[in-house]
Length: 242
Image 1 (cartoon, rainbow, N blue to C red):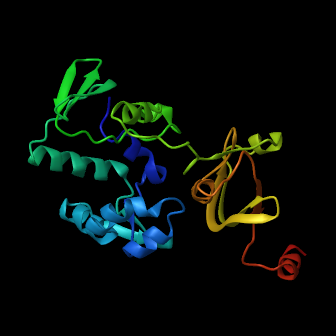
Image 2: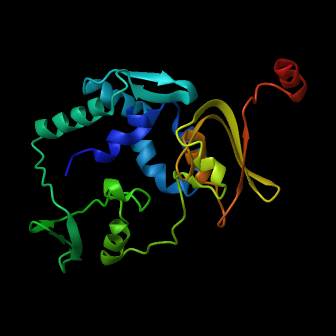
Image 3: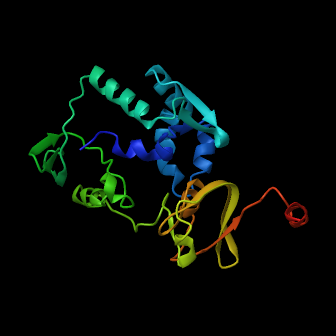
């Protein structure tokens, strides 16, 4: 019902459009199936993305971790720039909910929506996964892909928050932590370690460090360790407390 609904909430409403780094670094930082991204990343590398938005009239800035944001810190500026680009190119926008995707004998497709049927030679599935139904990511894309003849692999979490068993975590809902280090363990094995920000929610923990860690999870559970003062060793921390 609204263009750019997912973009609007990215980066805490600030929209982290890309990272200021090379293609190889992006691929090396992708925990699963980075080969899938190779074609897209080599054609439109991070520098291309920065130039693209600058040319659309959105000044950008680089923050810690080489993250690139609009200078205004407003996702709406990114959405508006993309919308204006569509208008200039006279791209028709049809707002409807697709219910079914029907492949035709000639290789084209018919998208069956709540408001009608739409024919197209080519369809790009950009539905999102199943992790945020409120934004439209209800898992329909997996069904559409199957209907189009694709194979859908077993699903696993990526860029999602953690549910926590401990009840006291819920009582800290809304607490945000900065400059901490999060370590995720599978038994005694370290799956992921990162320095940055996190926050407590009504169901567990979230934030940049947790979302990144979720891509490395294996199995049903893990143990999360939070170092509140990673820059200090135990003796220096003891001195500071005293």
